[in-house]
Amino acid sequence: VILTVTLNPALDVTYRVDDVVLGRTHRVRDVTTCAGGKGLNVARVLASAGFPVRATGLLGGRAGEHIRALLHSDGVVGDFVPIAAEARHTIVLVDGHTPTGFWEPGPVVTPAEWRAFIDTFPRLLSGARVVVLSGSLPPSVPDDAYATLIAIAHEAGTSVVLDADGEALRLGVRAGPAVVKPNQSELATVTGRDVTTAGLAVAAARELRRGLPTAVVATLGADGLVSSTRDGDLTARLSTPLTGNTTGAGDACAAALAAGLLKAQEWEEIMSDAVAYSAAAVTAPVAGVVDPRQVQRLRSAVVVERL
Amino acid sequence: VILTVTLNPALDVTYRVDDVVLGRTHRVRDVTTCAGGKGLNVARVLASAGFPVRATGLLGGRAGEHIRALLHSDGVVGDFVPIAAEARHTIVLVDGHTPTGFWEPGPVVTPAEWRAFIDTFPRLLSGARVVVLSGSLPPSVPDDAYATLIAIAHEAGTSVVLDADGEALRLGVRAGPAVVKPNQSELATVTGRDVTTAGLAVAAARELRRGLPTAVVATLGADGLVSSTRDGDLTARLSTPLTGNTTGAGDACAAALAAGLLKAQEWEEIMSDAVAYSAAAVTAPVAGVVDPRQVQRLRSAVVVERL
Image (tube, rainbow over all chains, first blue to last red):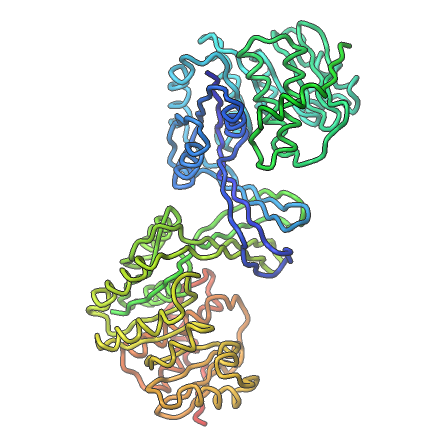
């Protein structure tokens, strides 16, 4: 089974409205809610692709209950550590133009609650071959949270996929996860390098993994993926780039990386799948779900090159 | 005791953000929540002014639980009829310019749930000398809802203050509440008359109450109030108009009218209090609460004139 960890889940709310005009009040035509936070998106992608998955993290309040219920109806088994504070909401206004988003700050997690998560983590890992650590940390969780969880996963013999940013990424990488998946801007920030071409990105990825057992897979948007692993360096992209809603593409990529570790695939195959999953998410009618047949079709359009 | 009825309560959420830019995502700096819906605002004003008050209405889901908890912490006793659907949210974006609001549609109330409210209403009215019927109806509650409740209140010997709009107002007035409180635009719509001056508004108010035992008190914004009652016609306003947040002024006015009925005051006194409460709400640091000392001070600045 694949375990996904979401320390800062969100209740994602989408408001469909007529044209938004600042300074006015608007009737909301339609409200949709979805369990959000990157780790939960990864879990949903894996569940929709037929992989056994379990979701954990920190969850509190009425919004937390709502998230739990939504996950359940998405077919994802959740096992969360409770916290007192309310899970955050995100609100996205959709009016036919570019959506406008509002991100609430995450809940305050007490030191005792964070300690409870760390103490519970070995039990949560039991039976998990792969764990995905994804997304932002709530403001009060320490920056070395992912580093701590990676050390525990190593003791349990569970492979780790890390998708984080800022200090959590920098400290997490040093703990040597199996795979780290920065996007272009995260890779630039964590290495302090120019990564504006695939070649530069591969060089930065190679530097990031120096001295570590870690594979680096960086997402470059429409330019696809680059990877640097102990097996060498690869680029992978669609022969013809797609357009669509890119919101869930990074999480679909992380899901494919976790699935690849679970199946102990070769890196060429993992990279091909990661591009196909990302592209399937971009073209999916519903965010955060991929159609396995669509993944199958897209796989044949992926070009993987060894550098 | 004064009973307030809120058939379409809301969880009012305010997001403080830096400048809103359409098509971007924003970090929310601060989230505040408040039990909303006009009847609950009236209840909170009455509680803050020291009057015995009880709030009822239809309430469902997690948002409903949240509203219940917020009301409790505001010192308002709630006794709601449960419904299955979620109470609505309202979201207001505050960025230092004119706030931008988003109103979710109300919950779908089943015929059985509405019937349950009607059946419970006599019990809810017991001990209530005055009942305030305030605000919008959820989409699926019939337009004659307030008319039905007014008939039941009459049987119970409870005086009614009605603050509604559209069909609910038109049908409600015909049921002969003790007081109806339209604003300028509602008065114009329900009478089909020009009400752009105090004189015209009084004439429209007089027409609205024709053949009814009903007093009409219309709010005219900075121009104060006009009333037409069996005791004659009055205007009331501050000698010097105030500026501030006018959102809660109408509900503070309705609260003062209910308090006036409870105390069986003369109309001059009721109108003076109604202006003072509205003005206190406009100048209050927190929406929907009035400071009784501030009301006391403002009362001396109210000019009441008999027409």
